[in-house]
Length: 111
Image (cartoon, rainbow, N blue to C red; front, side):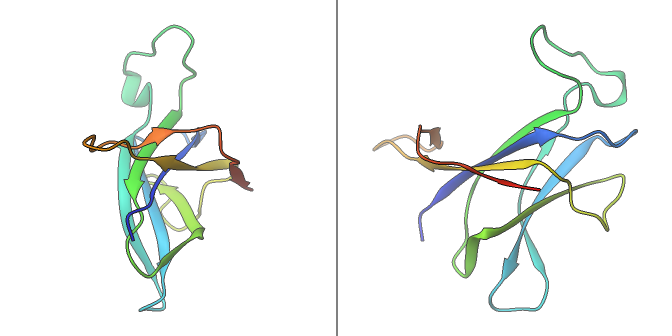
């Protein structure tokens, strides 16, 4: 499978610095980490104009055996609970470019 996806949202957990993108693996009973990213403004970091503190966005390749509707996100502060209001968007990859490009295709939101 060569499908790329992007997850984004706002992590409101105080003290969280990193988000982990997970998906339920068909090969096991647990979750597999498929990506990670830093949270904007974590630990007093810089928050650019127009960007909200706590915002994150991670683009990743979905591995074989993982379904797009099984994608969840957690953070390093509360690793037992999944974040709410996560937007999952499929991406298109241009020929010769190694990074996913967001498209206007339908997105779905995990609540």
